[in-house]
Amino acid sequence: MRRAGILQAVLVFMCAASGITLYDLLRDAHWMQPWWKSILTFLPEVGTLFAVFELRHSAEANELRKDRNRLAKENNTLIRANTELKATLDEERNEKLDEIAKGVQRPLTQLEKNAQKLMKYVGSPVVVKTQDGSTWSCRNRSIPDEAPCLLNRSCLRRPLYPPFK
Image 1 (cartoon, rainbow, N blue to C red):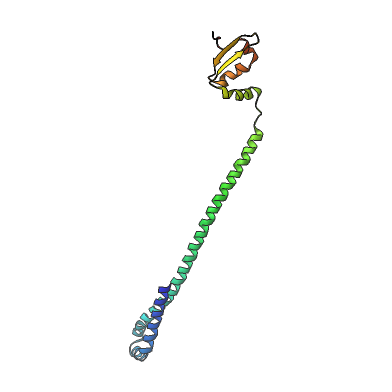
Image 2: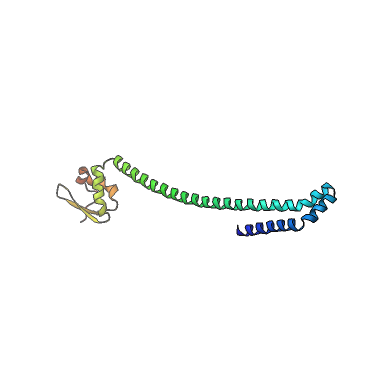
């Protein structure tokens, strides 16, 4: 911007200086030649005037570019803020959906509750006492597969594994 202003001032000064110093000479030369030659000699000065107007226009274009860049930065900032807000809303939505899902879950059956209690004993030795007083022991490998039989009273009458002697 500053360089364009300096160039514009130099060009205006050159035009004014050439017009003032060469006015009489140019006036006489223009009237001595045919009109079309006079017009041709004026073209460089007209071009200088166009250059001055073009410098003003380029300064205006530079200002508009600065505005565009500033607005692009604001746009990027707003896009980032929008993305953060969307992420926050997604988190809140997921929390609400989790709450809804908890309210919709079917209650656990007694068998499932007992299986959950027995899960901490997977892999530990088990001793089962039946109603007739006999005992048998085994090593739990998979509580969920054995839980229905272990928790069913009819299965307790006959041992799953032969008793250890």
